[in-house]
Length: 122
Image (cartoon, rainbow, N blue to C red; front, side, top):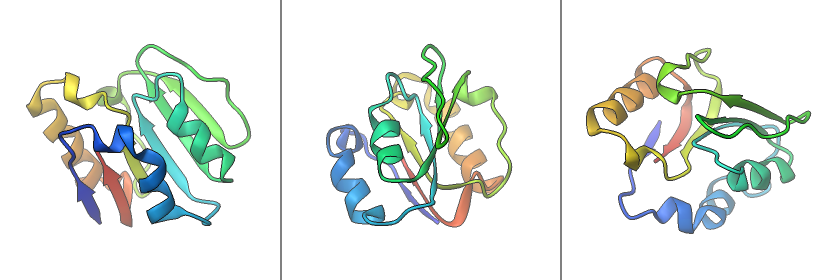
């Protein structure tokens, strides 16, 4: 499993480049979009024929065949192990205390939110 932690909002500003590098042309994958907001990452992923679970504490996106939206606190949600090919943070985790973020990363790795060869981009 590849875990990358970016502290300069690189993922936010260059998400399309990251997506195209790691997943361009692939379909049928499942993504977790943490802090989806109005859904720019989720919509981009969905347009490329992949599934998305979009989680945000404030916003809830319209659900479609490939997009499931959950309005919830990501720290309180449990997912089935090995559910996601990629877990991405839409620039929200920087707003939380470091211990909560570390706990979430451990949950993502230890409980297997991401598949064995999945990626976590924070």
